[in-house]
Image (cartoon, rainbow, N blue to C red; front, side):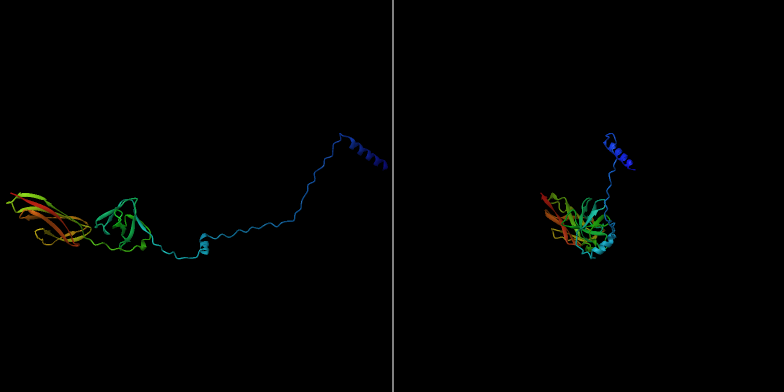
Length: 252
């Protein structure tokens, strides 16, 4: 037993002194760090409320206050006539073209026409058919406007000839008088002739089914050379007159 121990020591010395003896392989130790166990975090997902519910919760219910605004009318797809009154029987006094707008300031009782500032002349007003325009704004707040008073809007009188040279012994002479009466809507016109010689004719009437112009004529007899005038005087529906001057010269 003692001899065996010496043999083991000798072998060990010989092995450690031999450079050709391979070095023993050592395994690098793996170090483990122990940490206390941490609890797994738990994330809670909030409950999402629909937008309508949030609005009800966050926003108090309020009654909106109406604010006055401008109501505008624009043509649907083509120019629109703007008339003196709410109907096609009234005269055209303006037009709303495509690409333009007119301020609406009223409406007819039946809602079929809009009362607007005349796009052709903002100093006046006229009517647009609701069938041909598109309106934006608070139309409920617009006042109801009644139709305008219809009347004679123009009178034009001409005499032929305007100047006449006749022999002094060639009287009486006759001149032709023509008058054009224009109304802005359907009406009955009552009128008469008045001359510079003091003649006043009987009253006559003329029916207008719609706006427009009608013509009346007469032959006037003159008895001497002079400067004359003749008027057509409208008595109803409005008082208005128009006239013309003419001259007759006596040639010896």
